[in-house]
Image 1 (spheres, one colour):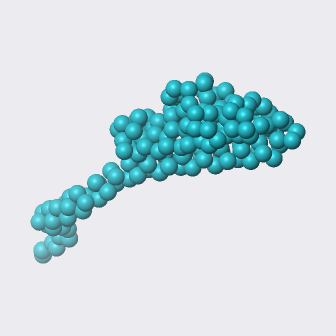
Image 2 (cartoon, helix red, strand yellow):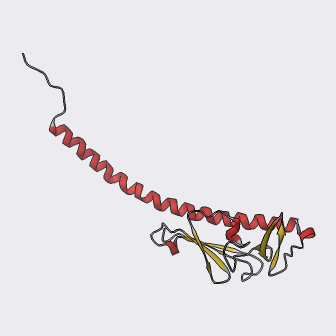
Image 3 (cartoon, rainbow, N blue to C red):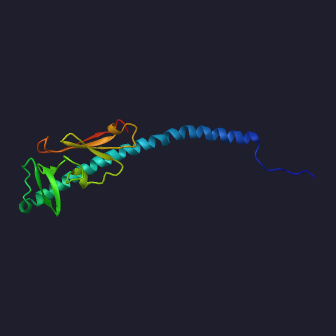
Length: 159
């Protein structure tokens, strides 16, 4: 009486391993590019957050100008809007002379980024997990040095 064995031959197993190796050769580089795309999306998302926050603060400033003394024509103004203190330049949030003190960085959540001042007119938010953090960043320039308007600059070349 012969016993029939049911299983895979070594040739079949080798073929399956070769096919999986070829497929992973194509898939791994695509997955590696996803982390770069995620960092770029995070930088662009923070840029959008900075812009929308600037416009929201300006709208609050304009809406409360009659009662709080918010002066849109003033190069520098400190005041209270809806119970929170702000530094504004021409009605736009200040980039700051110090961090976390009524400037733009105190108004937003920038988790995953590190904030630091770049001279008096701007605050830079860098992505520390990027290959080149200083070139994977968002910079907010306040309206004091760019009269009447702020600017947001995005650099994703090092993400």
